[in-house]
Length: 178
Image (cartoon, rainbow, N blue to C red; front, side, top):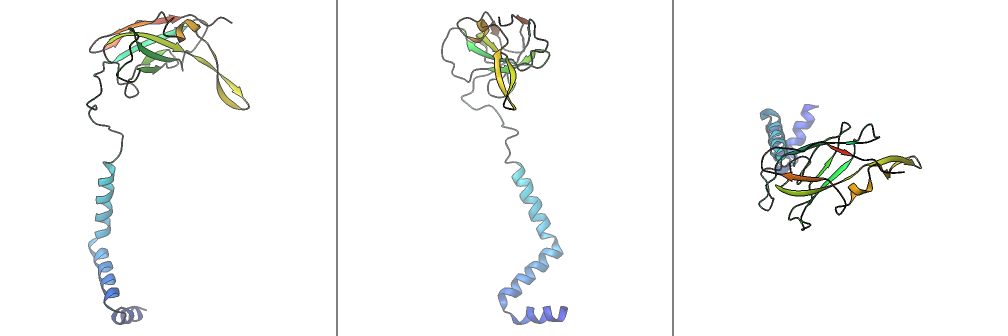
């Protein structure tokens, strides 16, 4: 068999000769392994896991943590909190948000999940929708907290964020009336 290959190799022309020689070079020098490794290492740097330093137009943020409880609700997990500028102005940054864990604890984020909040005064809105099944699918049901907490105009929750670490006081919310 090797004689047939060798004779085909010798008689088919210079282009096949070049391909066979290149293939032999790749096998002997492990060229393809080196090339593949180089490409994989180069592409690994193209991911979005580490977005790098903040963009120039991002406002500096400070860490904010807190906890809520809702009367009559064993686990307030899933409650969504939104921080609105207290003076009613339009923020030059995305509204900071958080989602409570089952124990009611939350960490607030503005540009990413838990990066913090720009220093300032805020009114905080909270909604906690009961999960209901409709046609076999989970859907947002009624709000379990008082409707006063869901609107900026009526929420009694206020937060002052300063530079550095901020631990908000625990907020005990009243449940929605049925």
